[in-house]
Length: 128
Picture (cartoon, rainbow, N blue to C red):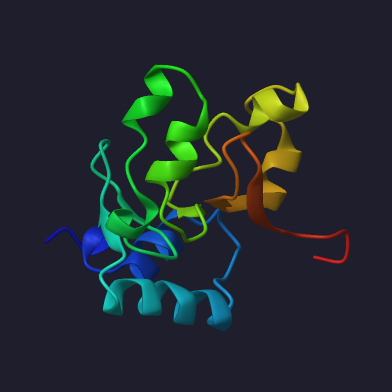
């Protein structure tokens, strides 16, 4: 298996912006996701992980139709947080800045926390 795909923790560490280190609690979380088989290879070939199995979370095909109660009935539980490398690609659009802006090197996104595009990230403050 590709080294970046041998574990979610390794894939996430490899995707960090230069100068960032993965905090130990996040490494422990990513290892827990792997140990519980909540990680899988996504449609783009990257290893991704969630806080629950995709079976528990249900499938979201009905979203192509109307948003009514059908989604709530098909979603059995769990929190839909997606951990994946390279979620920060396109982050410049969020801030309305150039793709090469130096401030982007101070942010390293590691999770999508909501269907509205919300993200969780590590960042460097001015002291770093």
